[in-house]
Image 1 (tube, rainbow, N blue to C red):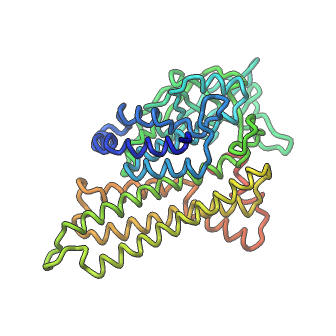
Image 2: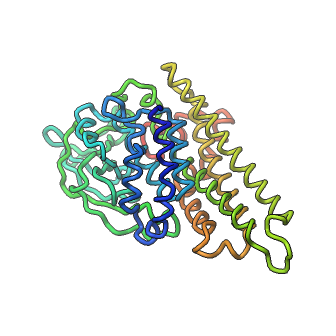
Image 3: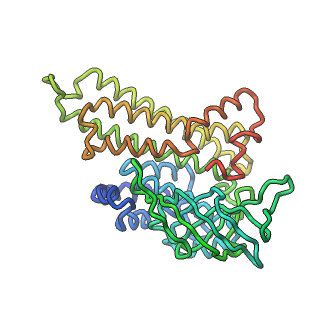
Length: 394
């Protein structure tokens, strides 16, 4: 059995554990230890880590299926699985010495934020890092942190040849950071996406990188534009949440008799139509995403760079998959009637979780404007899709 197939089977078998701890995930605003252990044992957080570091280095389409499967069991668990998998990808982008240090522990989990809200003052052999970063999903079960920084030489910003500020991601042990209890939200509560801050932490050069740097590992997985790849994984979470919602509605429709009716909900033409439309939306969005990702993966496998059209279609398909998954959940939520509003019902939580997931910049509706620019002949290197190498699209 391949690593990917083993991971997919393992996360499917993890469903009873996740369901058992569903209430704790919400109440504690983080993943309980048994769920984290299950994801670790399944190899989810090491799916995209290079084989040279003991990782899976698996096909990204299979990685998306794994994330989708976890999200179909619980949205917050799926989001944490996605974040952990994406951050494992840095094993192929960091300088070799830094990658070996960070990923030496097979139980390593990274959390952090790409946006350069910190500062890194250059010192001999590295940087002194200070800053605060929001949205560090999974930080409560992490062992390493990362944060985007503007690089300073003394008190002056370091600039590129074009005059832009030099920015880098800094990687540091979890113990060097301080978690701020900020994650009070409507949806994805169990991701524990708190802010964190560091003050004057020294980070060696080997534990810093940026997306414009050439990948260290030679495999096709690391030649894919990182931000674009992560967008596909992000979209896999709403796909899984929507699948959860549709299955929950089918169960409800088989037992609920609507007010002023003699028949079960499943016998109502309106409910049947809404479920049919939801299935069509979800499956079509998923097919577009996987078609775009498969095309990009084939190109990377041939050792070729992605065209702007391939990058754009992958970003667009991630947005479209998320949009249609959200529409599908809204349809079955409304079809469930008053029963859907109770916190004890899966549909209520699915709606909160998918609305929160859909707010991520990588899959928001603003991507449609950029897609339109592309289809009208714009130079994509100057648009939002040209942000892949800067990382500010995440």
